[in-house]
Length: 213
Picture 1: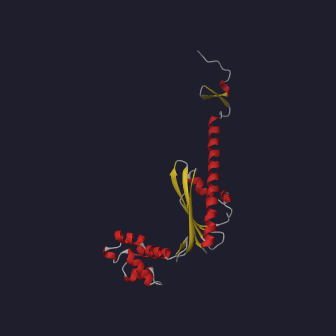
Picture 2: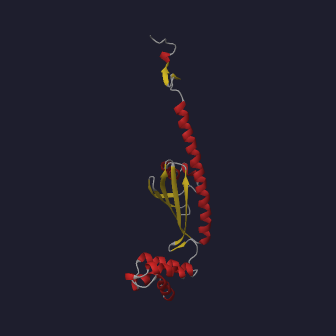
Picture 3: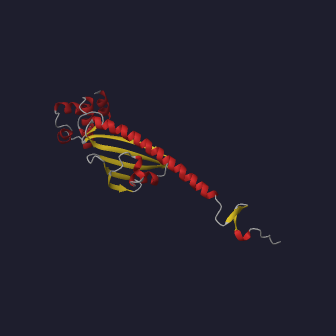
């Protein structure tokens, strides 16, 4: 409980009533009410109510790893060497989504270049995908998979998304390298109907023509 007492020393006094350490003991004696009791009877702000309740549950072993109020949830993120538009397309376009083993999912809402709200293939769990600009030709994707049934499923999906995001990063990097190589090849290619001479393209009509004095 020392961790909560230290928080209480900094934040748990004043208009909020007792320190955080005391809030935790209040949870112990009023278990079943939890955050609701703290909010209604002790005047604790709602954010702190949830924080203290979750902390108490974890300290007492009442809340498992990945467990949230609405079930279980896991998250993961990955930085990829690709523009933001390419990253978003890899999720939004079903043909580009084949890097994902379970690619036949339902996109409920999409904000281009920013976020997607997805119903997972099991039709019971949800996926929140967010994309962030991290620099020139560099982006970050974060995934949160929520409403999972139990700790076992949460652990399984944690592993699943770690592998899937690695696969996505590798695919996008390879595609970006290929795209850049194509651009460079096109930039070096002579224009049709002419040839390179001294840094400019000379048309066919000028070939063999003598320069006038």
